[in-house]
Length: 333
Ligand code: NAI
Image (cartoon, rainbow, N blue to C red; front, side):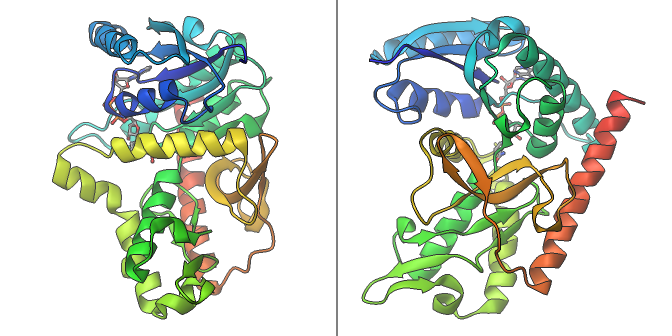
C-alpha cells in the first residue's frame, strides 16, 4: 500500500466539510489504495466543535484514514500537504455588501496562499470551494508564487452536476447518459451553463446532441440557464442553509477527476487561471471545459462559440475582472 498523503480541509467544522470528510476517509476521492492523513483547519472559536468531528472520524473505523489533526494554525495544516480543499470562508451575513464579503475573504485566502507557499508540497493540488471561489483561488495562487498556477482551481462542478441532472431529467434518461455540458465563467449567477456541446445517450438512438434531443432553444437559453444560475439560491430558500451535501459530492468529483483523469471523450468544468483561451482575459480564474491526464488539465480547444454564447462569456468574464480589481483594491489600497 502507498504511503499516506496529507490532505487539508479548511472550514473543517462547517457543513460542507461534514459531508466531504466521509468521502475522503472512505477512499471515494483518492482511491481505495491511498491512505490519508487529514489536516483539519478552522478558526479558534470552532475548535471544540471540530473535536466532535474528529471523534466521529475515529468512529467511522475506516482503514484508509490514518492521522487526523485538528488545528487553527494554517502553517500546521498545510505542512507537506499533497491536496487541499479550501472550503472555509467568511459567510455572507445579512446586510453585507458583496464588496465587504470579498474584502473579508481576500484576506483569508492571502494568508492561506502564504502558508501554502511556505509549508505545502510544490505539487499540491488546491481546490477552492469557499466563495467567491474563483477570485479566492486567484488570490491564493498569487501569494504562493513557487507553486505552479495550474495547481489552483475553483469549484464549478456543482453547477455542472446540476446542469447535467436538469438535462437528464428533461430527456427522461439517467444522469450518467448526459455528458459534456459546460459551465463557463464565474461560480456566481453570471455563469453560463452551456448545453450546446453536450451529448446524450438515448435508448435506441445512441449518442445524440442534447440540443437536437431537447429541440427547444428557448428553453435551453432561457429557463434551463436561469434555473442553474439560481439553483444555489433556490436551495437556500428551501433549506434555509446553503447546498452542502451536493457541494461536498461535487468537491469530491472535482478532485477525483483531477487525480485520476477524465474519461476518454469526456470533459469536466473547472475554474482555472485563464491562459486567454476563447478570448477570455488572462489572469482571472475562469471555468472552462478541461480534459485531464496524468494529473494535468488542458482546456478543451476549438469549440464553436455562437454570438449568444459570446455575450454570456463576456458578461461573466467582466464580473471576474471587477472582482479582481476589488481584490487588488483591498490588498493594495
Ligand atoms: P459553513 O459556514 O457551514 O462552514 C464554514 C466553516 O469555515 C466554518 O466552520 C468557519 O468557522 C470556517 N472558517 C471561516 N473562516 C475560516 C478561516 N479563515 N480558516 C479556516 N476556516 C474558516 O459553510 P459551508 O456551508 O460549509 O460553506 C463553505 C463555503 O463554501 C461558503 O463560502 C459557501 O459559500 C461555499 N460554497 C461554494 C460552492 C461552490 O459551488 N463553489 C457551493 C456551496 C457553498
